[in-house]
View 1 (cartoon, helix red, strand yellow):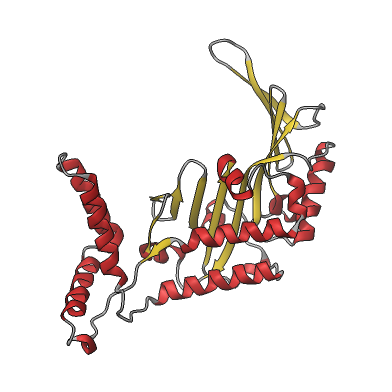
View 2 (tube, helix red, strand yellow):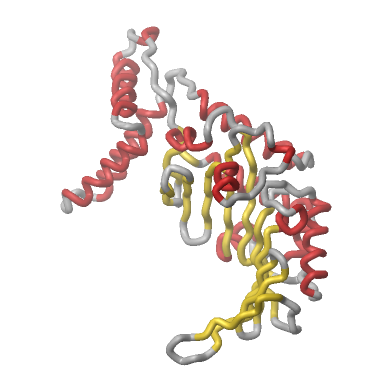
Length: 312
């Protein structure tokens, strides 16, 4: 199962047995805004008549969120939350759910960022050189080096991953409106007992990945010299590569909006669209080995998960 962290909302109907309880007080009015506490890796916040439970299911059940859980383990983790907090959560509303896949890549995860371009409706950005993200208010797709993250946090890598050199983590985070749109209304904890819900979560993650613009790596193909259009397009694509790739050229085009305030927005959008069209080399056989590898591995893993083969 691809689930990592969930945020669950419940009506406050009991006193929770949590540790490290503390109250967050408004500095001006002195009123208690909310209370929070922990029970192991389970975080609980109480605000008015509601409570919010936050927990990584793999971390709760297996001590580390690098692991993928089976459907039965997801159910087991939910039951464990209920046991730890001594409250039922089946009718809790899921306000955020993070799904993920781990991809063992041939090269360092960051080397693939160069070929992952923009994504419709999601803003692309980099956090240093270690994470690539696409997000709007309710959705976020993140790529990062999982092994590097664990080393930075001084978390010991499980023995089963000792021979893993490169591990690309792809996370897809859905919140509130995005969840409601994906599931035609609220998503309740009890729906995770249904395998169809798990399949839908995998499909949403895969779809988010597939709509990213993937850049090809240009090369000069002398076999199409009889086509002026193909010849010029190849030269233009090599020029894009020289300037740093599609993402760099699109950033340059965006920068013109700051320097030429009378430039109409549709012109900027058109030039970016043309840049991506040139880079796609439509009708000209070109392959990008890195993207071919990544596309293939993401597709294969998601397909296996949907079929019920639940571990990578």
